[in-house]
Amino acid sequence: MSIQVFGMPVSHGVAIGRAVLVASSRVDVAHYFVSADRVEHEIDRLRLARDAVAAELEELKRDLPPEAPPELSALLDVHLMLLHDDTLAVATKTWIRERHYNAEWALSAQLEVMARQFDEMEDEYLRERKADIEQVVERLLRLLAPEPPQSGTRPPAPAGGADFGGEEPLVLVANDVAPADMLQFKRSVFTGFVTDVGGRNSHTAIVARSMDIPAVVGAREASRLIRQDDWLVIDGDAGVVIVNPSPIVLEEYRFRQRQSELERARLDRLRHTPAVTLDGQTIELLANIEMPDDAPSAVDAGAVGVGLFRSEFLFMNRDGQLPDEEEQFEAYRAAVVAMRGLPVTIRTVDIGADKPLERLTPAEARHEHALNPALGLRAIRWSLSEPGMFRQQLRAILRASAFGKVRVLVPMVAHLSEIRLTLEALARARQQLDDAGRAYGRVEVGAMIEVPAAAVMIDRFLEHFDFVSIGTNDLIQYTLAIDRADESVSHLYDPWHPAVLHLIAHTIARANALGRGVSVCGEMAGDAAFTDLLLAMGLRSFSMHPARIASIKQRVLRADTRRLAAGLQAVLGAEDAQTASTRLYTGGAVH
Ligand code: PEP
Ligand code: MG
Image (cartoon, rainbow, N blue to C red; front, side, top):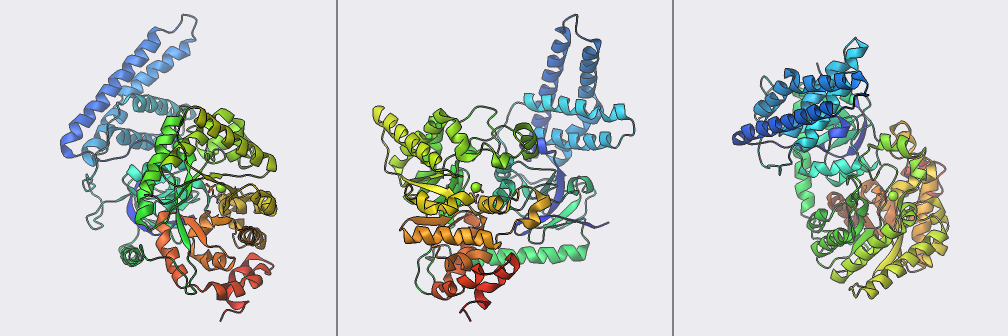
């Protein structure tokens, strides 16, 4: 039977594929197919890991002190029994043999199946054994010797599965996916994803958009309603997931997929067209990147530089081992070199809130660290609380500037004291490099305007910075007091709210008046619904995911900034978001 699950559309497009249910904590397990001749090798890896875990458990049992409670020894026996139990061992091999999953994926797939069986048990004692099987699988995953993923291998057709046209793409279904785990998608086989939790502007959603993967988040019951291997259509435009669609519905979505491929090919042709409006204004279209590897796709997409390098992604999922100065320097230099002389704006780490340092899911992090992490030790606050680490990052960024044009961007500044301390740290980092005889170039220093206090104080802030970049994602969150990752209030997260528009317009106007660079690097910059409005406000620099550049360029090429500017006051004078969103063309002199 076909059912529909509703959530929030966070990344455009349609994905059609078989569901792979993955526990949130295991999304970062490598997922790849092994070729037929590697199947036995993969099963061997599993066997070796199982033997190693058995030895580990036996040793633990042997070394138990005499005073240890007898339950401990019994627990280790249960773990040994589960380790050798057919439900785990045989079924995991079946995933490898029949589906060609790598060992890690096969183990986590089988764990997901067993966890559901335990959840459905009546007996409370048995239900609680789920934790034991999870611990055993964790041990196995830890002891599996890492292997480089194979690529280009197609999965075999599923036994007894419906024929949906030969291709067998897969979509991931999870309760939650942490932003750092999203990076796994680049190397994974999934063509779309659905999560139970998350908001439209959560960092997970942003990374999905940056990868151009159709996605629906906040689909509350999805991971409970969807079963392993169900056929899914993810409608990333409407925020709907259709489970086991009828042939007619499926055909409709296949048609839409083909249409968007054609549209993409058409937009691709704009790649090297300069972004100039009808009235001759040149608009700078920059890219947002998370890792140095993203830089080539920024160049390919026609970006004229990087407007936001979210450096915190280098710091996440590191199990406490943060990147040192050398590793950071190499990463920044790689991005600078890959951009071939185009400017690279490196934001200092924006750690905290839904981007925790440790491998915690955002929900765990929320409970572990602070009541209101978005209002806590985040971004520049975190950097200033770790002065040694901050200077290390600044030195690495400065050194990369010897290889091309680099700009430093400071996130979440709200106090003049933060500006003073940041500039002092930068001066100190330069001094340290001078003392060590290290080369560095001239870097411009800018601030993210993403806290209302900074937007209101923009004139004072601009005395200290060469440029500003408006982080609309956080500016909306903090102006409207809406947690951007919380789906229960996401209907109130509205970029058209007049208070938000006033802060953005004011920041752009003052930066332009004072002759300082101003850009928008939040999601509004890559959303074609806001291009005309931002142009009307006087914005001439937009930074967005590379995948969005062509669509925004298309809007720019059709815009006349003088006519648009004439409609701005009507938008700013609107009393609510609904009215504001209709006024640009109807309330002013346009048309
Ligand atoms: C923003 O807040 O708009 C922004 C670009 O930063 P991030 O989304 O990384 O918080
Ligand atoms: Mg931000």
